[in-house]
Image (cartoon, rainbow, N blue to C red):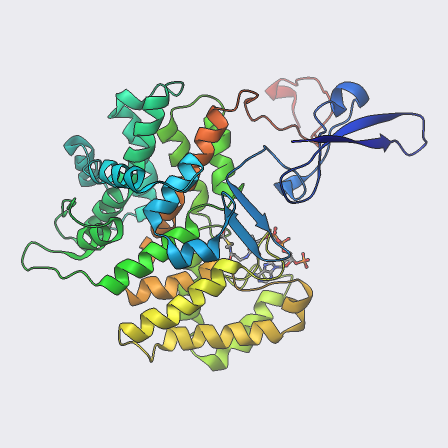
Length: 432
Ligand code: ACO
């Protein structure tokens, strides 16, 4: 990172200071305000981190204006076309694409960590039959620190590696246990002879009563969705993982915190919310009414699956998923999907609407992913869990980068205090 400087002068010109400027490999320059409070006695104010970099990172790059997304320098379009999820996972975790033997070892290691401790599996007996799978996912991932003590030393590289492989391997198994609980069906153990997404489909849909045939197109579609969801730099859940982990908390707790942050409808919960919104809209004739509601500032309703903090042109993942969506529906013989037709109609109406054009609101990754999940038979309440399975590797890569950063600090933002100034305590019998 080369350095430049930026001069900051106050309004009356009575004081100024030089702020170092950091230059990334690509992207805008970044002002280093670390010494601002010490030298000038002021904080910066940026609710929601709209213009604030919280860390430096070598994992993922996004240019929101040009619609660019790269993992470790590789455009996501190339990875989506030529790679597979576990190879992308290796790339995110270790910085380079694996050699053939590295990939073989990595696949083997992930395959060997798919089973859950039986004690942990019994946790599911305690949840209500209709518990939301995201609630179960965050609780069970949080509880992993009680079972896998060999990975609790965050300063030990081998422990970090085992943690990374273990959580990546076990997330589909935990997700499947949650799905089976909701379905009232017996848990299906993982099969290590299957690929990552084939095994996931097997655990989700197989039943002991009859053989289950894995649909190759479904496995391919999931693999692609996981590649597209694998990382997205400092998004809400990843920043949460970094923040929770910055205290030195065990890595399972940090990931559980990320899962909880992902659940919100403004973030990963949007894919579930899109489907529920489309069902609520019901028919194309109702679209204008819902678009008007979304535009009404006094109405909290928003068009789910539209808008993004960073992408102000288009979401490159949405373009890839849109195509995949057509392919999946066609290949699975569901060419007339009323829900997909409704989604396409809504997309067209919104893209032509002045409000959405002016505010640069385009369909995001979550707009189409739910339609694919629905076509694959995945229950709506599992959609955000699917996002979490894909994103786990990104969370782990960021956690690892944060923990191994020699200049790393506990995350501790400052604030603009707007409460009462100092006042004296009044005993209860003297209060009016
Ligand atoms: N429908 C209607 N209006 C919207 C929408 C929407 N989906 N999204 C943003 N706007 C409006 C806002 O009301 C705001 O209007 P204003 O200028 O009159 O105040 C303006 O567009 C800018 O929006 P902000 O909320 O300030 O943008 P921000 O970057 O904070 O939020 C977010 C981005 C959270 C994604 C937002 O667009 C949203 O809530 N979208 C719907 C939920 C969604 O799809 N989330 C998934 C995001 S992708 C992901 O996490 C994987």
